[in-house]
Image (tube, rainbow, N blue to C red; front, side):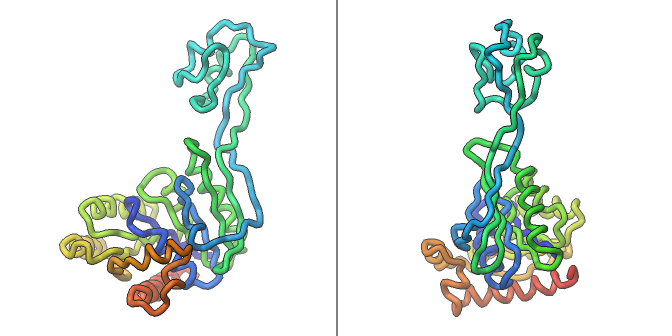
Length: 287
């Protein structure tokens, strides 16, 4: 059950657009959106939800009014200023349990807190597993782990899993990489793009996962595109393809379509198809 995770060192490189195209070209893979802080792969794949689950991201304190002796110790001990007038502000409570353990009257309980949702859905391109966090909620790495667990069950040990990972190098990215075989980094040829590409490649290397790179919007800067190629040559990482800036990506998104479905005959689509063929040659080693 090979796993391909598509990452980017920074936001805005076109990672999700490329991942959506791969989902179309793969033909009936398991598609996973692990960018739960800003989930948007569903906008172009249009999945129909079959199963819906609540995600418990942590605990929240609740003061039991009938047992509270109003000693004020909970408010004094709370480092997050979440307790005032013997009431807990759930938006500020971090579930650290200090109040629970220091309350002399045992008047505080910790309850599961639903932080988001995740889904198993049908799409025209295969089963899709995706989710989203609620507003101002955290623990996205844990939600990513739950989503990947569902995806592996759906795959049944046979299908290719294509994961649209989060940008950057934080906890949800690490969670996305767990168990992956190949990580494709979508990079843009800018100074910040190169800087963040280096960071995410280091993270992939530390997890002993094979890396590949594609350069999106490659014509933005010939100089920085050359820097990326040289960097990959030095690290012996394959650059599987390059895609020029194309307004058709925006046009396709406005119609809720992956680019390869919106314009199947364009030069950009042909470049993406070649990238997918190059990537399959790497993935096949893990079948």
